[in-house]
Length: 361
Image 1 (cartoon, helix red, strand yellow):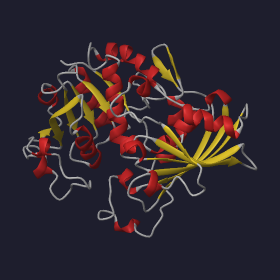
Image 2 (cartoon, rainbow, N blue to C red):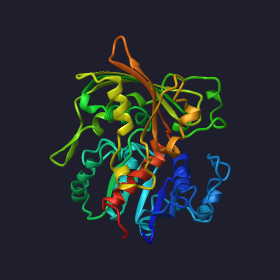
Image 3 (cartoon, rainbow, N blue to C red):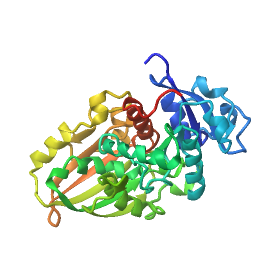
Image 4 (cartoon, one colour):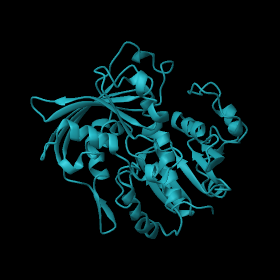
């Protein structure tokens, strides 16, 4: 690619927006040309708007420091400057839905980190290695929105990335029941330990709305397109508990699973090791080379040691063993703000570009 696509980040001052800024710095295909946020940040340079609020360990990239932040509600003005946008805003669900549709109707593709449109029937919710075929529903969505080039595609919940890829690699064996408990980092709430001192030396056994998402979103990812809508799968039956733990980044899951056709341990490990998806086939810039890594050590994966595997875009697993009630149990881990949030959305955008859905205006 000779000329990079122009990217806008709507919600660019928050934690996920900052991750987008970081990940797009020196990206081979994309260049940030616009950043938008609330009216309170509009008119300031990006550096000014995040002063005292920059949450990442790496410094603000030089290329974006002097970009003047725009008002995200001025849709036409922002859209005119970009080929597509990433959206990661903190607003009410109906407001997010309206904002994202407004951008799409300008002919601007929207890759969303928000949950507002995850259950809109003609909007694909994508893990690129798992359900790239769901992008086909975009044609029907464009017709509904009255645009030939705009659309919305969304990223699923961050915590399910810690166990859905490992289960997906085993779908041929027909998993019937899954129990997953997730131990989730505080950055999933947009916080660090300075913002949230109550999390030091503490565990909170509740994350609002998280368990419903964790139980239902995998079924939509494994669903099928029927009459231009994505219909969720009926199996496996999933139940979860989601717990906030004193960790900065990385969501860890303990998983129990039963199958209709029980595989051997060797078959499971082989499926995990060999699994590749469309991003690996296409060689997308953000794609992990090894999507699923298995650790033989009894005390791995560990959040602090292993969340950054494959630049934070891979997932890892360990402690696979037979169970006395279910067929197997194991531990999974993913980086929640990289694979689970901004990085996963960048990978979706790369897939959309490679498959011809995003082009220069």
